Image (cartoon, rainbow, N blue to C red; front, side, top):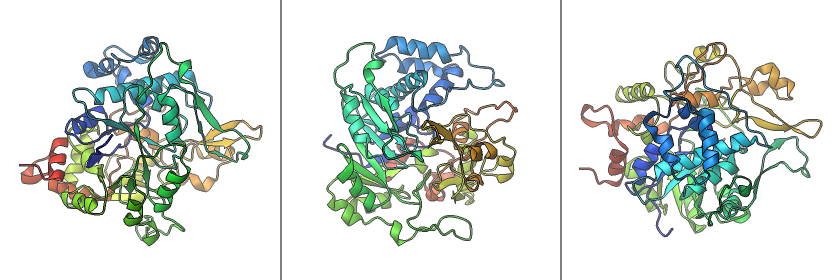
Length: 475
């Protein structure tokens, strides 16, 4: 691709930046990005809700493996949708050996999301993944490539092996991805393996290899990616600590402010001149969602900006309407607050949380939730004495986590982000105790700045409004 967009719409949460939002952005010539995190779970729940509007069926129309599509559809689709008081079907958890059912679901779900985002225009669409959610990477990426994803973005880790994976999968060749396993010996093979031809029902021509953008927070990581990645790195998204979602921890010791938030310093700043000297395009993220900051980024040599928060609250985003309306009301009232929680995420990375009544952001409310890990995307793999691989999560029952060799200190104030982020898009699980999962909304520190997108007493805005304002093309 010879040209790059000035605006990348961030891949947000679980399903917040869905195909509808990505398509709305891409149709206007900027880069619409779907969130690839837990897409298999999102897709399965959409089918259990009855495929409202028939969009999942529409997205499957061009899926090349018809028997696979039929298996997935028959497994999860409920005509008319499940009873609202019934829980969603539990899925077998991902592990390094499969299961095949989950791999097929990943392929199908990622294909459908990209295919729907590409409908009605010829512009590229991207998909964003968290490097820390490692086990689903290979089948998820293959599904995205089958659908013609134009960009793959990845952060929350060091994705050195993703470029080579893209090279292999685009040729339908076997791929491997090393999983971080606590306590594993250096000589032990901890990779997950994926062979496309084990899943292909028909021969296909080579696929287009998408552009790969690594999401970074330091010059060191940018240099490391270019020197040590096993394939081509096409650019960087530079996320500062004010961006929403997971943030890179501060370098060195992590002092906390009086409010209990991590304190970032000079060592956490990226030298843009050095970044520009690397010779690959980059986009700046974290508080850049204004026309002035876009121009500032361009003047600093950036190809453009990545914007999340302002898109997360636009009409096309899949964030629950009650949450969206409440957050926008707090913005208008000048009361919007975002807290960088150093403990909430089981990953140990700081996580931005919107202070919102009725969500897991309320400590008292979260205390009522039974500790349970039933989705497992953020589980940590660890080596068992036998040499096999086990899995644990700092948000699971404390006694269970400790019995698996986990440090009890890591369980303090950890929250189940997997269930919370699904609840953010209206896919709340009903637990066996009858507890209904609530959300935990993430936005960047620039949340209060959204007031400029709500002029003259308006209470909503569209993705087109965002792009027009950022580019200075609005009436």
